[in-house]
Amino acid sequence: MNTVIKLILIFLFSNNAIGDPLRIATSTNLKLLNTNYQYLLEAAINNAGFQVEFIEFKNADTLQKSNKGQLDGELYRYSYTMRDHKNLLMIPVKLNSSALFVYVPQKSTCPSPQQLTEHTPIGVLGVTYFKQLYGLSKVGFIEEDTITRTIETLLKKPMSFTVFPHDIAPSLMQLTGTKLKRCYSKPLLVLTSYSYLHKKHHEKIGAITQELKTLLLDD
Image (cartoon, rainbow, N blue to C red; front, side, top):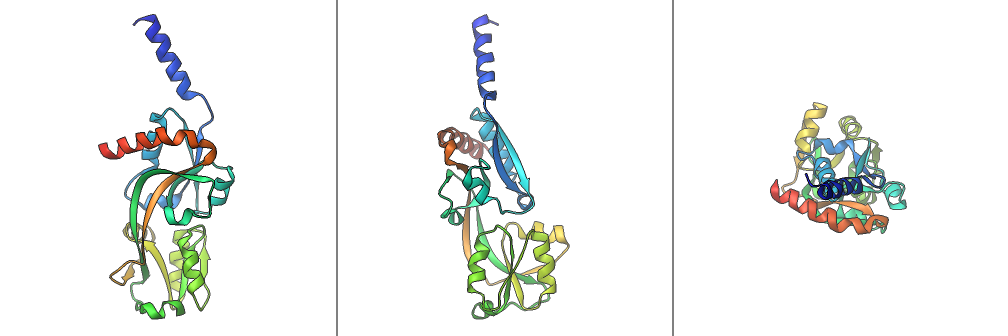
């Protein structure tokens, strides 16, 4: 191989390895999804010439750290929950859309929509959409630090309910050995998810966006 070409390749390889890896927050809850979004984002970041390290948390309560720059970004976040986190910039490639439904234990009766405020919402720490349900409740709320504990509490608490995206419900029931009943034919909300980076990495977003688009098209 020509010496000049060798030097160019060495330079490019070394250049790709320069800099600290992006520290991206992820959650154990994402393993319930059918698609490996961590693999997709890792490939996109690497293909764009950067390195990445995923920091896995048991719950989703990492937004404050990412917004302050203590972490470099978030793997999977619903766009409507990000309005108060101005330092986090969207990688503008949609990862997923999820319909949000009310669930109760299989043997329980679904409350009517009008009765929902009189039933206790059981939520997961760090999942923003639960906060809106808490605000509507007339009987308080319960917040757990993991999805599995949320299900355990749901089974024990009379007149309670929880809310999950429909695409994780089958995996969630399999994981916990619990059968849940979906209430209502229409979702409460349809959520769209994206990855986010702290604004200090704004110059990287364009290249990562192009690589992520390519990967999703090839999938």
